[in-house]
Amino acid sequence: MHGQPASSTTSTPRSATYRSPQRSPAMPDATPKLPTARQPRPDQRPIKPSSITARPSEHASREQQDRITALGLDCISFVVPVFNEADCIATLIEEIENCGRVLTADFEIIVVDDGSTDQTLEVLRELIPQRQRLRVIPCHSNGGQSRATCIGVRAARHGWIVTLDGDGQNVPGDAQRLVESLLDHDQPSRVGMVTGRRAKRRDRWIKRIGSRIANRVRKALLDDGVSDTGCGLKLFRRALFLDLPQFDHMHRFLPALARMQGTEVVEVEVGHRPRMAGVSKYGTLDRLRVGIPDLFGVLWLKHRALQGPSMPDHEQ
Picture 1: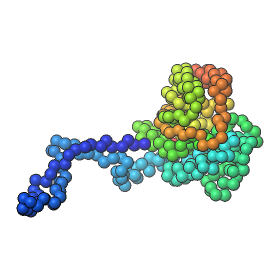
Picture 2 (picture 1 turned 120 degrees about the horizontal axis):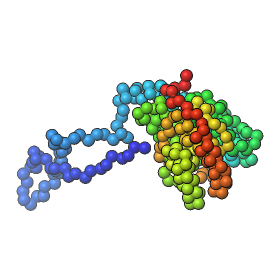
Picture 3 (picture 1 turned 180 degrees about the vertical axis):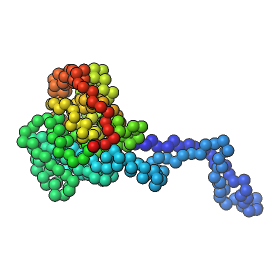
Picture 4 (picture 1 turned 90 degrees about the vertical axis):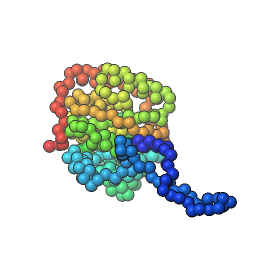
């Protein structure tokens, strides 16, 4: 998250005050030359400590905690829609739980099983006694990622939502990047959504090309200011999401829909991993078949929808 401090190779002068004892010419001087620290020039700026190694002061930590509390980020709900992910869901939940302990004071993990036909639901039920923060919502039929996400957000108990794909390609620890980006914003109360941008896609080349073309067309038509709307890792206000028009495949257009509500959307670079197990649930042709009509539908909404007010500092 933070860049490594640049290293500099500067020669250290020998001490001018140290003198070795007198020895005969035949005896070599075995006494080591002790270097002294270089004294900074009067006009030289002091080197600032790295943000990674420097410990924040108690005042800075308290100030940041006050901002977290004021924004409601001390309580977060993780929402994960899954379909036939029996081989990787247990590992993913463990990662999310580890991330939640570091990220916030209180959190819950809501997994919506979207009518899986493998052992996903059975695996989840076995995990419930071991994972106190885990909540499982089973669906009797497969309704798609958008429906499963809507179900999870409605069931959430906290004001901020973090969504992740259930295949494990999103890195749960990157949720901290989203939170930090929100805290570093000049006016965090105006931000309703922080969305990830996958820096290096770990998908097949045909999927990457199709996604790149779709993102460019969508961005040109909707002007949503986001280059990777398909990234499943997002942080947003629950109240904002519940105000959005809900329809099938809406998860592909969340940044554009959020901006229609008058809120600001921030994009942050995140990681992406190869699939842990299982197979992709989307094909390139399937995305095009449903994506084009949805794109024009959202474009119509953009020109017809009433603009919402700016987001308040917190839920009333």
